Length: 150
Image (tube, rainbow, N blue to C red):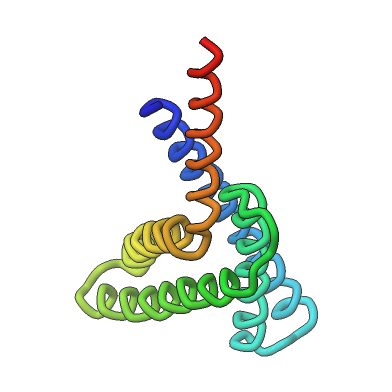
């Protein structure tokens, strides 16, 4: 049972990271298309592209990473809160680290790791907590029925 839980968590972490890579690609592609090809102001393009990355993240993490089942409006609100807090903390973190003499790339990398952890923890144990509980209950029910058959 401990191995199965550990494997499930490892799978979620890996899939969450892969979704993050996809989010970054969506964000960059939309930003480039808007800013470079359509000549939209960079700040406007950034807001739109970041939003597209967040929508991509919500869809993939909800459906694939956490297997959340039926859509629930409160999870969308919680998702927006977690990502909004991460975005604010990342902006403050990059600013503080870069003012402290950190190279910009190192500051961005450090802040990205921190917000990635915050996003995973917030997603797993707050946004889609119902999905985590359902999968654990399902696992216990399968194990229980297997024990009865033996």
